Image 1 (cartoon, rainbow, N blue to C red):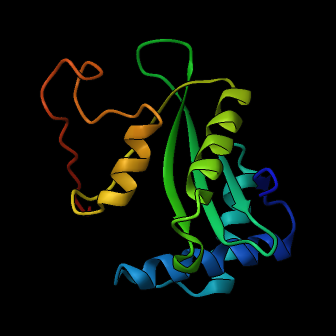
Image 2 (spheres, rainbow, N blue to C red):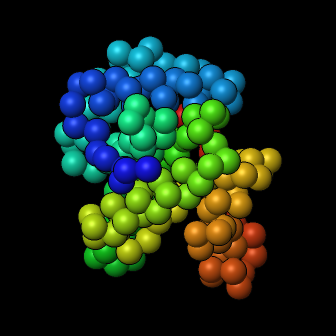
Amino acid sequence: MEKARLAHTDDEFHCAAELFADFQHEYEEPVPDVDTMAAHLARLVDGGDTSVLLAGDPAVGLAIVRFRTATWADTTEAYLAELYVAPESRGQGLGRLFLTDVLDHCRARGATYADLNTSEDDEAARHLYESLGFDCHEGRGEGPLAVYYEKDL
């Protein structure tokens, strides 16, 4: 697989939006209008705090990374908001290569920390993340299980 690439053209944002819609559909979440989502992704990238990366040609993988300044230090953190590999491309090591490229991109943007969330029942994703050093315990493996909360406002 070639290195992950940053989306920067209208066609690439449209491709990313299609993959995002597929992801949402697969997990029975609301599916956005693809054209609206493509424009939204382009705006996020133009804002400077988001990267949209694609894997494969044609693209079969999508990552959306949001960057922020850490609360407690003048360092950059990366939040992996979305990571998706199309079902027909899973089980071939593509996810591992893609996530490795995504993390390299985060480091290149100055990030010293990355976080993400996934569901407890997505064992394949959890295995991938843990195999690349992500931990779901406070204190990097020494503390209690970290718990993620959410609330619509």
